[in-house]
Image (cartoon, rainbow, N blue to C red; front, side, top):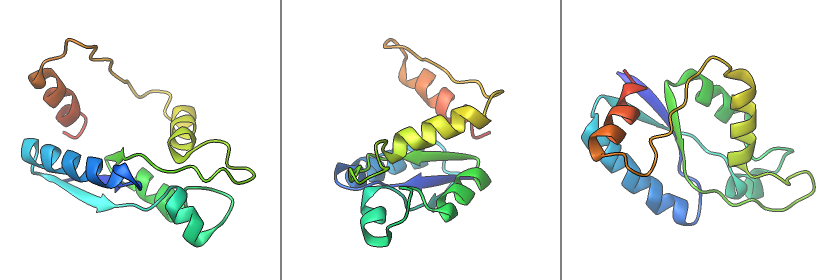
Length: 121
């Protein structure tokens, strides 16, 4: 069984990610969703110099995939970039051989399903 870390985010992220998990679960039920906490709300409660705790980074690298919902950027000193930007830049830096796909605006439901589940096989 494949594992996917899930950063639910905060605000609207909670509802969006819950809906996404139901859809992905229906398409590929052999995925274990592993909760992962990061973002502005986590930072407000815990502080620190990053919106992403070390435990979250460990989990993101241990799982086969991850999903991230919208997160709040608190705007504190040193927090110019939100959690999404931090993850994107960091992962782009270390993932040189990984292929990404642009399905464009004309992708069918089947194309999208294949693209999502294909990365987890």
